[in-house]
Image 1: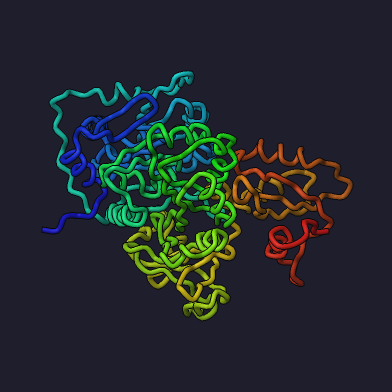
Image 2 (image 1 turned 90 degrees about the horizontal axis):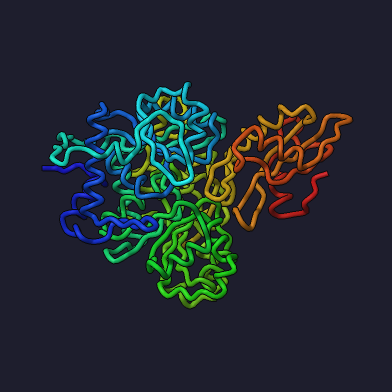
Length: 530
């Protein structure tokens, strides 16, 4: 009598024990757990009626609304696979992902309809379900969400047997190549990651959680499941709006939230932050680009946020490290505390084993805070692989260990801290940006001879792309013209925020580009390379 580990069971529990508790607040709309359960069941039945079967893929392109929450449960309880889409991508990126994912149904917010309209004739989608939004008219030929879930009240859901090792969600993440990879996450990995979320963020029944983190990002880091498990309240946030967030802290008594360091930075620099009195001392988990110790300190002092640094990847559901706070740290100065909180930390209780190994011999590095190695992990939360890509899966998972590509040190107390990245990935505001993809676009510009794209520090986004360019002889082009060119040819958030023109790029004797030297110049030293 072994029940499969699936986060879907938490919806059943919440409805059983907290039917009249407010489950979801979305602007002026509220839903109890009983009402939320009814809506997700109707969505599940409507999908079943439309032909969606166990194992089928359903793509979803929605912001943080109650509709997005309903999709996580309604789609997956049918044994179907949810494919959350990043609505900040270009139409070209979305075309690749939707085709690669084998999705046959797409649920899309009307605000993003124009992106889909551009590529609709190139997609395999058989049925479109459109969430209507005031002020946004969609020309997509499909049914509205509310009409879609308006089913016979006497409907009976088919019985679905869930295997905990079957895919629950297919989450796409950018790699060092231009084509995103589909990360296969199972019911089991989502369940255990959410268990980590529950335990380490100390989620309780009376918590009110604000969805500042996009739910498409590794399933809201597990928040979409964990809050329901505790019977807490989800507060939806369509867009990150710092004044509104600060207002919601008090209006809804927000007690927990997650977000990239860029969101933290937005909050502490919002003028209202200097005058508002936040009484709930919200617990906030942050990850993405490593947060600066000064930023953590400012968030705690100015807003009373209890900051927790976590670390993970989409491939690990995502949590594999968290910064455990010990009472012994309470006696340290605020500056020392912020420095400790800037570290990625130690293993969580339910994810499995994580360590830093020497890249040459594969042995664990000394716990000295000095020896550099790669973070590797194995256990309950690691993906089952990249969808339809056994070669990339084999590159990432070797001898039972997932290799993160992040370089780090381990301190004497076991706390891990990232120092650099093996891959030249830029994490800006929580978004993964491939430096080689930007370089590929810039190399198409007629005035560009050579280019290297690196991450440089940024107060708002943590880090942003910077392009260092060697121009063709006689070329006369400005920084703003180059930036405008990249923005015209790729998603705006991927475009470099600054350009520097140089006479030559640093290379080895064999002509290999030395990006680490460029990074050293911008992170540690002078800001000119020529």
